[in-house]
Length: 241
Image (cartoon, rainbow, N blue to C red; front, side, top):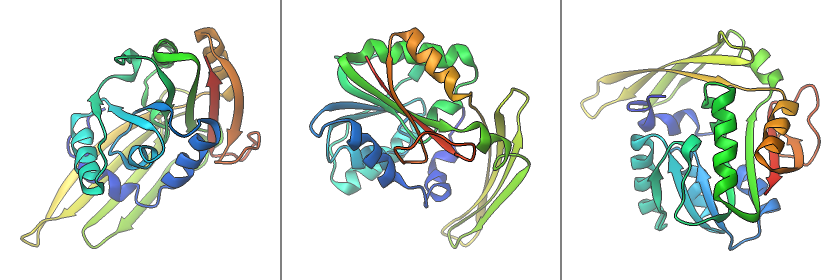
């Protein structure tokens, strides 16, 4: 997962992402004022909003993503601690009330062992009764929206072409992205990135959560409180230590 060039164009790709709905999802399950670690925070768009309600910290594997998050937090006037960590080896100074892995960040893990390691690491960093919240791409989304699809955007400062093709592993996708970023001299810099994601059936995630010691409180779809249907695109999990 190399984000060296990608970090600075990521927000263009995600400019229409419903970050407020992720925050609302968390607030339905975690009381204001709680301590919260937002793992896989990326450029901090959701984390900065969460920090208005929680004693929040952000963690990500990518140093360049965290640099962008720090710039955005400073611009927003938010004091937000940011740490570089691998979610599979999560280690906090003290246990927290809640851990979030939002915006399908968990799907960047390569295989089952990585997901299990992450669940176990999260469990260890939560207080007794603490809450773990995350969302992933649904199997349906992998098989339809990410199955040999092309997406494009022609912006004034940044344009991109995005190819999504099935990966070798079941329910996986390979994202090939090419960005053209406007420079001050009127020329464009070309930035190319390839990223892979993988998801699993909801029942498999539940088994791994239970195996790590969690009690699964809810499995819902698409920012609602409804159970996932066959056309769901994003699955949300809430588990308790």
